[in-house]
Amino acid sequence: MQFSEVIGQQDVKERLLRQVQENRVPHAMLFTGPEGCGKLAMAVAFANYLLCQNPHDGDSCGTCPACRQIAKMGHPDLHFSFPFIKKSTGTTTCENYISDWKQFISNGYYFGLSDWLEAIGSDNKSAIITEAEGDNIIDKLSIASYSGGYKVMIIWLPERMHDAAANNLLKMLEEPAAKTVFILVSNDTTPILSTILSRTQHMEFQRLSADDIARALQERNGLDRNMAVQVARTAGGSYLNALRYININNESDSYFDEFVNLMRKAYSRDVQGLQQWADDVTKWGRDKQKSFLSYCQNMLRENFIYNFHLPELNYMTDKESDFAKKFSRFINERNIVEFTEAFSRAQRDVEQNVNSKTIFFDFALKTIILIRK
Ligand SMILES: [Zn+2]
Image (tube, rainbow, N blue to C red; front, side, top):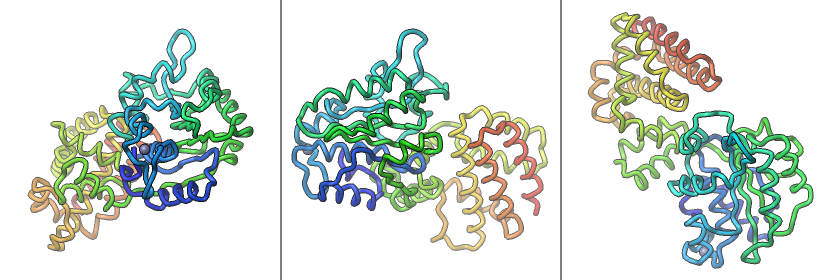
């Protein structure tokens, strides 16, 4: 995993490289920022850089034995700790899931907790880093470095640590061992012990630019430029959102169809139909609901712009453009702000776990009024 494989985040890359050059790699770092902006990818790339036997030109070489071992997730000095579901009997540590984990991350480093839990056959949101895993981390790091260089422990989502595990971690951070580097990768630092926060060097990741996402979608996912730019604009700075969007639109129930359904039913004041629509959308997982709402906001914006006849500013697929020919006149100066607000409020409510049936039905009803403004 080379730095060149991490999307965007150039300033973070440069900061990390400078620390190595100046020989001041901190023993504990905390990568923070929104989901899907590449924190885990960067953590692995940095670990790879520290372990590479022949780093040059600001990147790991990609070909030395260490780089090859990391590519196969088999480097003995690179360790991972991550949330999982406790087994019903015996102690559970990451070792119980390590082969699933290696298999899972071999598909790429842009994923969310819900993707990982799905991969291990669970939608149980109570996944944690157990007390036993805290001991496991100590055990793993007490063994001497295999290669005589760095040992790196990447802890994905430390906010999910059991208190006892967190206290163990704190002890290790208080008495740092030489050439051992902890990289904590967190979406939300609120639940993390303040004593842990104060002992880590923070690296804040920003949302990715739409340009970086669009480029990645063309290079890695084979999208044409128009589609890539359009998807990137709906992604809210998260490559993960963009990937979810592409995957979902390969399914039969595309966001586009559901957006059209909503608008048609609202226009014809079909309250029963809207109730059914809300029931259907509610069956989706919360991540999918969120990314759908983000898609809807983008469609509103594109349809609003469509009215100005400036095709160079419009990014829509052929299907969407076709729909906009008739639909765009319903999105105008009188309702665009309220419309967008209603969708973004719904998105916030979904994030905060408000009952999604109520959320979707409420704004479906609101759409009846807004669409006639
Ligand atoms: Zn190398």
